[in-house]
Amino acid sequence: MSTTQSTAKPTACLVLADGTVFYGNGFGATGTTTAELCFNTAMTGYQEIMTDPSYAGQVVTFTFPHIGNTGVNAEDDETADPVAAGMIVKWDPTDPSNWRTQEELGPWLAKRGRIGMGGIDTRRLTRAIRQQGAPHVAISHDPEGNFDIEALVKMAREFPGLEGTDLAKDVTCAQSYVWNEMRWAWPDGYPKRDTKGFKVVAIDFGAKRNILRCLASAGCDVTVLPASATAEDVLAHSPDGVFLSNGPGDPAATGVYAVPMIKGVLAADLPVFGICLGHQMLALALGAKTIKMNHGHHGANHPVKDKDTGKVEITSMNHGFAVDAQSLPAGVVETHVSLFDGSNCGIKVTGKPVFSVQYHPEASPGPMDSYYLFERFAEAMTARTPA
Image (cartoon, rainbow, N blue to C red; front, side, top):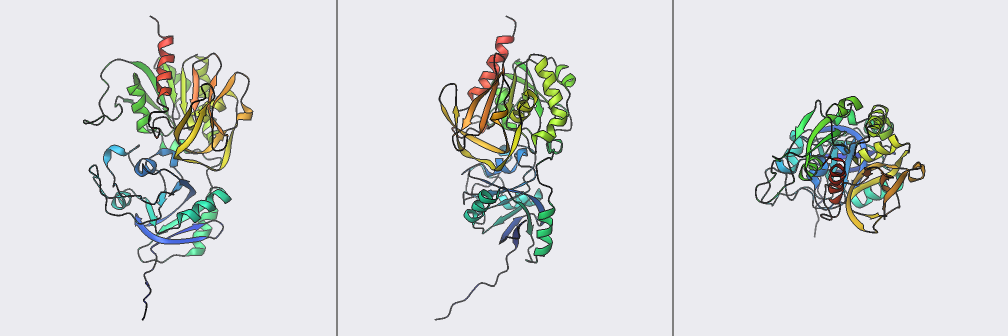
């Protein structure tokens, strides 16, 4: 009996800065890009993950193997185009099977210039990330299978990394706009808000659309301003409250221009609510510090404890930096902690309607465990509205 061995060349490779090489099958766009490598443990939502601006500068390894099997559709984008630099999956995407499918994952990525790579031992890769910290990588897709490994290692090593990098400026909106779309509802999709509500200014450090929808559903008339907005720009809208969005990069770098704005808003004694990068930016403005994590938190199964109530929420997270709880100044209280590693997941200012969380209450993995935060923000504005 004879056996045959496939001689097909791999069409993609992933090269870590330490020289480790993974070969696989490319899909999506061709070419080469460099980024930080992270892993995400979510079982669903790959389209939302790829279009989340917080993933700017990162290639995402999906630990769940069935990626691409529900295709993509226009309703699930969190921003206009994918922001993550690329994706790594165990199994090559199959033909999608879902009633909401409008397009296959591979062509969708190709049109938007994002590289995908399948056929990888994602367990081994995830262990490497956990052990080494989020490595710098080069990912390349060539249908002919021609790779210059030495050059790719050099590219990975020369990637500047995310620490000290302001990426909010790259993903924020170019100009202000009004948002009135609310959360998805069967059978009509996203309804429009048509009644008067609280005037909220949302600072876009890389805002996900579903956060804005949740604000609208909680009774807010939302005006979105770019990350570079000043306190004067914000207060010129006479807002009832100010929201600080999620986003990518090092909060200390973005804070160079955003912290003075936040301090100006705090001085105006307005309700303030922050999520993810917005949480970190608020902490910096209050006098705390942020730190780079080993491999960050990326997934939809993260248990977080509310220290006030003892309630445990199942949350979605996506962050590589964290607020250093030991650096919180007097008058700023830790409200939520991760039950995975005890890291900070929420703060509030004593006696003021100012609070923030590290996780994503709009992503609804619980599914409704954390929506109360939007209601809390609305209640804070109600309390300050003259009768």
